[in-house]
Image 1 (cartoon, rainbow, N blue to C red):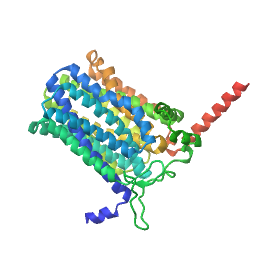
Image 2: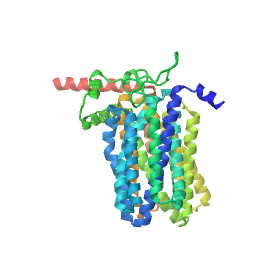
Image 3: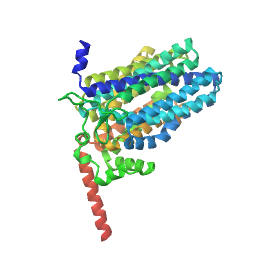
Image 4: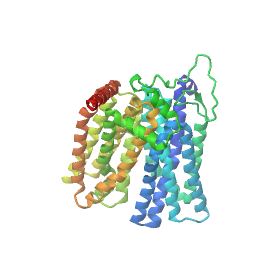
Length: 474
């Protein structure tokens, strides 16, 4: 019966399931290693400076590589970018496992491995996000993004649980080897998957072999021409620029100029960036909030993290099951207002008589359920409204924003938490989130989703250019 159901699924769905399944396997292995690295540095070094170094080593390299990876994702085969970056991460982890097996367990080896893993993640992330709309029809993007969000959140939920269990049973190098195995499995799956070229649309495996179809069958992948709105197609000059071997910096600037030129895309990205920074206190100050208000027991923080990630996994599952929203932009606003509301409730809790800890855990679960609605709707909006030839560069910008939000939030709000009560900080950030979302009714109109606004914006830009030229001639 299951076999018949599988046969009834469209071919693009089978490819998407295999791709996301392979990425899920790789994510679990990567999550285990990341947990093991933090655990080892915490116990071995027992130093705030060491924690700062490992945090910077895990975040800064992917920020530095993201502009290059975005250009590569638009210039080269995205499948090979995922394979090579994941393989590079696995090789670095394999070297680390061998060193620890031989007794060379210096902390600085961990730092070097973290830098290499971060570089690989900075390449793999934008390429993966750009590859999803390449194999997914436009109408099913939200569902697939929801599944991808669920996979990421379940991985985040399972990593500390499995990591703690494995580290209690096996030496550290064994956990490192698990990541090598999972990355290998993921790359083998991706190697043999039939994937359409993002430039020509030709469906081939990694070796360029074109699988045969039965008569009357089709892959169901989105067409290169049909999936790009007519008003967003690149001009002949832009196409020539994309295929010529230009410098990485110039092509990245072209992607940046593309975002700047389309005001609604630019405003949506700025809103996303500011919102994520304002969300940082929830992430970085929650352990301190718990310690100051509920106690120092380790299980309290573990319970909140479990509730948050469980909620995010549930939220991603709900999005994937629903599969479609009438307006992704309204979902972004609505979920954003709910996140700001939860932050406001948490602030009020901190300024008044605290309710039982169980209420706080329920609030964390609710917040977790809401977040995937926001992130998947934002991702889908960009996938649907950004021209495919710019997907890599635009998603590298998004990846940089997401990666920079926590470090920037740490710099901004960490020292403030030593001067002011955390509840007052959360009150201020929730108010700022509400004001930010209210401005989107003007900065990102609803007509943005229809594709009409992009054409209108370009027409206005042309009028401004003509007017400037006339003024100059006068």
